[in-house]
Amino acid sequence: MQDHWTIGRDGSTVLTMLGTPKRDRQTERREATRQEILTAAWATARVQGLAQITLREVADRVGMRAPSLYSHFASKNAIYDAMFGQAWGEFLESALAADTPAPRTARSALRRYARLFFDFAVADLARHQLMNQRTIPGFVPSEESYAPAVAVIGLLRERMASYGISRDQDADLFTAIVGGLVNQQLANDPGGDRYARLLDRAIDMYADNLGL
Amino acid sequence: MQDHWTIGRDGSTVLTMLGTPKRDRQTERREATRQEILTAAWATARVQGLAQITLREVADRVGMRAPSLYSHFASKNAIYDAMFGQAWGEFLESALAADTPAPRTARSALRRYARLFFDFAVADLARHQLMNQRTIPGFVPSEESYAPAVAVIGLLRERMASYGISRDQDADLFTAIVGGLVNQQLANDPGGDRYARLLDRAIDMYADNLGL
DNA sequence: GTCTATACACCGATAGAC
DNA sequence: GTCTATCGGTGTATAGAC
Image (cartoon, rainbow over all chains, first blue to last red; front, side, top):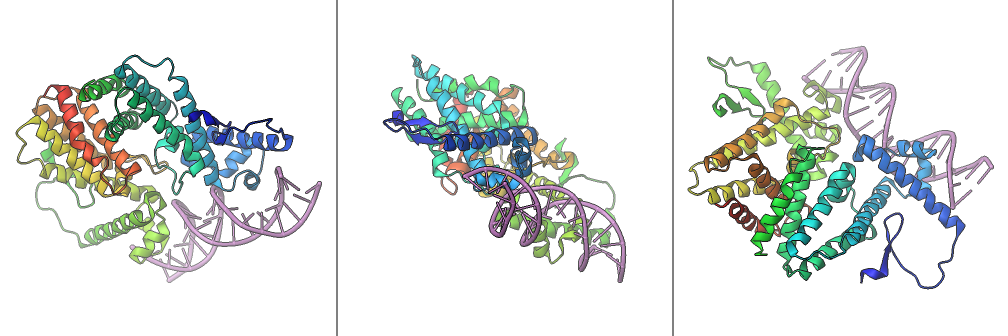
């Protein structure tokens, strides 16, 4: 199922086509410019904060005037949307990569998934706010950008099911616990490890509760 | 310790003074106007979203022009700050009220504290975003407005300690679990009970982990 | 197609008259 | 204390140069 998809450079999921992918220098250049803009937007977000991105600042970084960005993105929210898809696409890639070899026990698998998500979220506050919080007023991810996020949660449920953890509420509780520790870490001890140290204990507590 | 504080009408913690509190009609009127503005701000936040508050909209609701608000609050962030203190002040009040009679077992006490926080947070999204998330760009609560939040967490630690739960990491894990369920409930099933139904199970899991 | 110049409506905030 | 007028800054729309 997952094999029919690849993750585009901008994080959007695109159907893998058969046959020769016709190269088009014009669209290639266009795609490169889009990526330049996104990179500038990420840089701005990390320095000034996710919500403090301004089109004029992003345009400055790529050597454009602000209105020119509209040749590549329909709106500021469209830039956020592409960033959202890109971030979840990257996490999906690292989740797929970290999935082999498969852990022997359910407990060690849960530990690995939890640590993977926790570290990814804590590593970049702006990215975490965009991926997991509703920090941008009025921003709602498009179906296309949401696809890799859906794929990640689907992947998690699938892997948990392979260890016999198949109830919806079990996966829900798992994500709530890990997400709760992430939020507390970022909110109350940014840069520290006060809640990171509790992660393994929390997962063991969860595994015990499931009788694993 | 807690007895030296009372919660003002606007949620700010104020030192209880001895002697006759001199009444001053002028400052009373001024305080009433401040409260009117805050009520209008809450109403705006609930309708349009916390971050979508505009001074012009708030001023309209109280029959003023926008610049006139600056006679009562130094800035828009000062309004957010007063709202922050007010919200945590109200929760501190309900936490103190819900504390008697003291539950017999640690497990039932944890269930009560968890449910109290969960219900309060889920009841008002805008309020929860202001209290527990960093949703407003650049907003940092003042020490005064932060005081009731500190009092709440202090109260929780004190009560947990009275049941023998005294390690810092135990309280940290508790708040992470409950906060995680709140966030998932509001983000993924607003108005529903998908995560609310997991609360008691999560607390039992936590209590089991502590050997209670 | 890409970019610039210009303009518009809205925002938080300030100055000064009354 | 409240008003009007206004400022700089924002996202965004559009006309037109190349």
